[in-house]
Image (cartoon, rainbow, N blue to C red):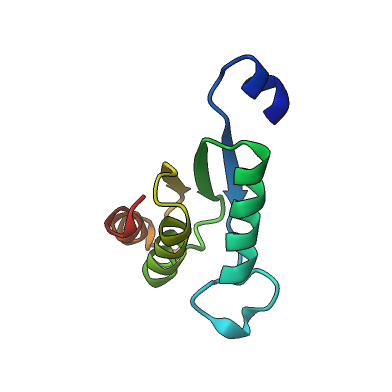
Length: 103
């Protein structure tokens, strides 16, 4: 995967599948630190572009701001894009929040 694309001179894009709610500290395993650690691991493997994939439409605007801002702070030159669904009715607001935070 990543090694083959890198060896061929391609652009490596990795996706993080978002679940939980990083804005709620009581949500357990999938907290902000989990995603920051995962992002660092992907960067260390050779990722050039990061996708935050919100496949269930769980990403709320406040969480989008927190997550993208924290990743942007640690990786100022990493292109980030967000893919979401409007399942909860907050998709547009979450995309605006992510863009304002640096995605």
